[in-house]
Amino acid sequence: MKTENVLGLSAGLLLAILAGYFLMLLALSWWVNRKARGNNTAFFQSEKKTAWYIIAFGTIGGSLSGVTFVSVPAAVGAGGLNQQFSYWQLVCGYVLGYFIIAQLLLPIYYRLNLVSIYGYLQQRFGFITYKTGAGLFLLSRSIGTAFRLYLTANILHSFVFQYFGISFAATVMIILILIYLYTYSGGVNTIIWTDNVQTIFMLLSVFATVYYLCESLDINSVTGIWETIESNNLGKVFFFDEGWSNQNNFFKQFLAGTFTAIAMTGLDQDMMQKNLSCKTLQDAQMNLYLFSIAVLIMNFVFLIVGALLSIYAQKAGLAGLGDKLFPTIALQHLPVAASIFFIIGLTAAAYASTDSALAAMTTAFCVDILGMNTAATAETNHSQSNIRKAAHFGIIGIVFAMIMFFWTLDNQSIISSLLIVSGYTYGPLLGLYAFGIFGRRSVRDKLVPIICIFAPIITYFININSELLFWGYKFSFETLLLNGFLSYLGLWLISSPKIEEKHDDLKHFSANQ
Image 1: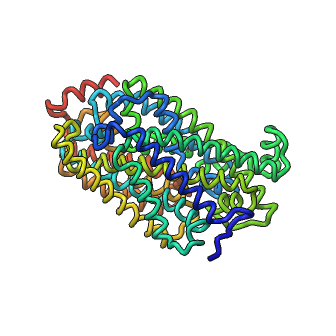
Image 2: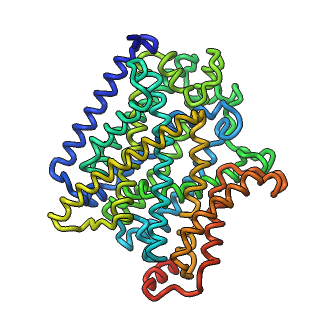
Image 3: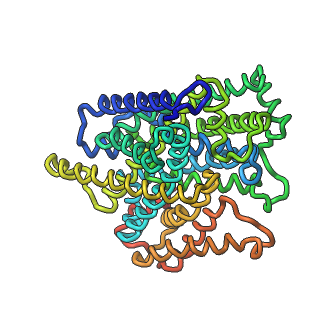
């Protein structure tokens, strides 16, 4: 059996590193939950006992998934969408989006004391709209999680597991089962702490990669890094050329980033579940402010990594690697230490984003779809814990099936695909919350699912014909805005002027935002 796949580092050693990393997470999970096993409150909300700065640091790891770790750097030198540092324009838009979330959405969630953020839709619109919102999240997050984990699993399979005769399907199942084992009992209570550890490993990995790339490219100073990047024509950050027809145009990217953050963070149970675990609204807002600064800095560092990788690839004669650019160079060209840092960082990124997503989907399914009471008696809580664990495992099965589907497509640029797909799945959620918060009209509850189905379909047809319809204009990530607008318009068409009396508290609250 051949196990040598990198310079001086065997697949067997890589596998041992992965096993040791998992055992560390399992031990940490046991320690965190030694007094709270089977507790649904701990699983869903960490009993609201965790300090905001602990949550903020761990959230960094949860947001920087394997897609950010691998696909963002790969796009820097590839040309087209997200070329050079244009992706950072999108990230700048994220920061404005996070500020809007902190000032507008978090106060609503805390005022209503929500376990699942989609409870707002029930109180504002009705039962069917509530279920529709939760269903949209489950669809959106399951696709997003599958996209992210597919990328990481593909790399781990190509560089580690296949050398032991393990199939791609088995590789994916192993990763998912390991995540289930350390989160099935503690949920968010576990994830908050494991994500902190994984964030540390991720940061060590990316900065170690910068160091070893600089060493390989004979760059001897911090200023020398940017001088090298600019001399290779990879340092352009802001794109104002060609106006709105350019997919990398600053205004298009910034605006798309703002609304992407609102939809994929503020209207996403996964990202909000940790924020709702803070003790107070003020703590949750501080968490989000710190998180936004960290995202801005870390994404810029990942783009620097991408530029250095592109320069190295040109000198080494490597081409056409797509999302395998980073792992190929890290595992087959850089020193052994860099390979170890990379494999741990990639694993940390995959686990940190996937574990919280699975917990959030479990929360949405149990609380929103099944109607589980999180404040149940001890006897009922035991029964519901068993249901929750079964639901958790079932969601893993769904994500596994989606990953296998993506594997048959063999997509080489996950970051662009993920953001484009999210524009169709999160758009109706954006329209629902905008209509609820900024208006006072009530809707015909039974018709809401129809609007949420047809808005993405119309968006798709407008998108593929945009150059013909809008004088050469070509959509990129701003399909989310179009989808949200069409959803809002559809809701207005099925609405009536006054909100029912049972929503007076929400009307008063929304009017004062």
